Image (spheres, rainbow, N blue to C red):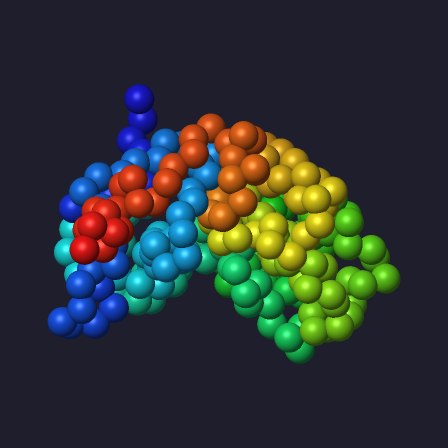
Length: 237
């Protein structure tokens, strides 16, 4: 078996000195191409863990390797470059740039990463056409492509954020509650696209949600408290 895409060993994270850790994970691995459904109650550390995966946060202790790179040993600029080039993030709050158009928001990762740009072009389309393809699959009408992100509905903004995460075929796609603003039909279409695009690119998908009805589409369903000893200790206190 090849090396894991994500590997954690004896990781501990706390928000400030003197506070108990909110994450204490002895061991966790994700293999290349896996589709992981991660769930847990509010406050269990799901978003914090995703922040660590993206190198936005750093653990106080332990090893965190993505694609063989030990993120805690990288500088802030190195982590930024790594995230831009290798990780597609779909944030819970979308994080779209409000004054940019829908199309420019989708293209943004390819402006920061030559790797993502080249991988998008390698699909056989122009960068512009690849963005249009993703928006079309996510049912974003062409009449909306040049509107500012703030002029879209919450559900539309969420789908634009998904297109931005997927463009350039990143090796790892991380989605934080990505279906919360979608109705049931759009949830199914959204999941189908995420699975299709992840499979086509060979991407590993880590999908966080409280809606366990969606878990059947994934390779593994993981309860965060099952791997996070901090959550176990808090529940026992």
